[in-house]
Amino acid sequence: MTDTIESAKRAAAQQAVKDHFKPSAAYVGIGSGTTVVYVVDAIKEASTNPDVRFVPTGSQSRQVIEKAGLTPIEFNSLPDDVMLEVAFDGADEVDEDLNCIKGGGACLFQEKLVATRAKKFVCVADYRKNQSRLLTNWPSIPIEVAPIAVPAVLRVLRSLGSSNPKVREISGLVKTDQDFYIVDAPFKTLLTPSDVSAGKGKGDGSDGTWEVNQLSKAINNITGVLEVGIFSGINGVQAEALREKKENNDV
Ligand code: 5RP
Figure 1 (cartoon, rainbow, N blue to C red):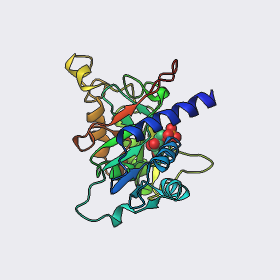
Figure 2 (figure 1 turned 180 degrees about the horizontal axis):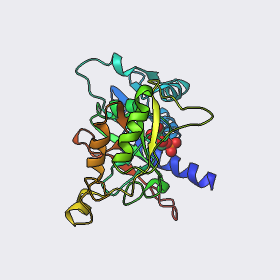
Figure 3 (figure 1 turned 90 degrees about the horizontal axis):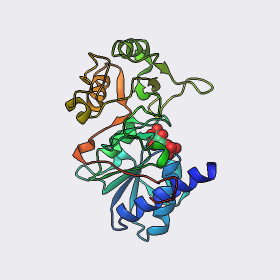
């Protein structure tokens, strides 16, 4: 099983790089998690241009870039007028409109910063993450929260309908690269805009249903929230999820 998952991640990463990485690119974003390690491997094989600069989305991503012998550049060192040619990242779940849940690895603010600075955001996701609706398999929305605001944010999340939102703990409280905490907030499976048009729910929380974009806005509006782990319509550029079918290893 582990082998199948790893080969699915590798195949999705190789396909993503083949389709979207140009060695002539000046700046390329590299996300966080285990799948992007395969993305970086594939870029290393493809790239013959030592001038490409890779923008990490955090300390883990920076290490992966450096270990591969590629050249990192911090987000805040980018020249003002520069857009990244492409940003590659993983996801925890992807819906049929290619909206994503991210933050399973406790990076999400910097990931969104990099994704929204890219002309194209390529979300590399294997077959396990492919669902028609968000919060089908993945249980909760990761949210990056200022430590002092945690109790207040938890209270507002409960009022929005989240059942039992919790601060993430893995042998102690998990801290992000910003020294913030991650709150994981479970909600009912999210609606797409077409679900709302089809009358499957109001999608504004008033009847217990949330549509992806409305929930994303509502959570980002809570004071103390730095960023929410729902990635939808990034800069109007649609994310592209590359999915591997379990049965035949097609990407
Ligand atoms: C980190 C992320 C990752 O991109 C996401 O969790 C996917 O990780 P993996 O590729 O290991 O499944 O958002 O916060």
